Image 1 (cartoon, rainbow, N blue to C red):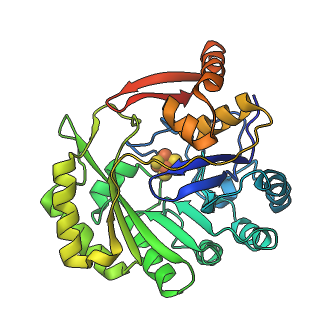
Image 2 (image 1 turned 45 degrees about the horizontal axis):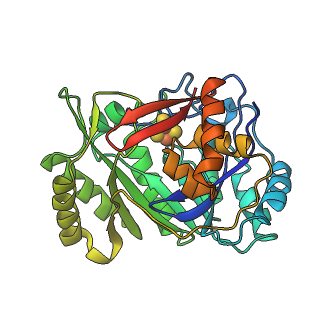
Length: 326
Ligand code: SF4
């Protein structure tokens, strides 16, 4: 089954309804990334890419514009066009050019979701600076914790990322939101929600001085089963500390649960659209219904067919069954 460049729209806690663009394809690997995060919702990374020069099967600007021009017409209430997907989008150095070209055909704000790994590179910062919003991951202010949680490709170091994020913020181009995924573990594994970790995160955030800070915890089954979500009580405690230290107006605690009125999406090939969505973002049945605006009765046979064909599997979690691509 082929996967397309454009997928969704996705309904997310953070961006509302956004159309996703995945700009690195690789037929033999489901996920292309230079991290192998313990919390990744897509499972393990089979092969970590270290630098943009190692990335292959890159999507071209022309392919993005063709795909978007065809898809975009069918969705009338997008909040964002978002570069994300099964890979780290900054590995494709055409990213800046793609953003510029999209602006010729669409007024929808453009977001890039990045794991921050390459933000110390000037060319990557220049690409990111063309977006309206950059959502950049930062899990810790401590190198050991960063290495334990993100498990980056060799040579990627936290101090370079922190300096790069500061430089990106100084460019005064896009709004920079730092996303902190807070984690706990059930076996003593090093995570990032203890008091000393929170104090260090605050110190680093004061240095970077981002426009927004989002704190959240996992809501989908993670790559490692010893990783568990931070309790809502602890999240609220942490949010209060962030509010006090960094300013309430820029701190946002993202809790699970989002309901949104339905969109008007025309479907050409429902099976492909459902698969393309689940490939990039594991979803519950209800999340697929909401994202793609499908009736339950219409979706049931599609999901059953994909499970029977072993394209997706259901994974149980405390939030219900999530479907993930095999
Ligand atoms: S969570 Fe994101 S950055 Fe981490 S391994 Fe998964 S795709 Fe890569």
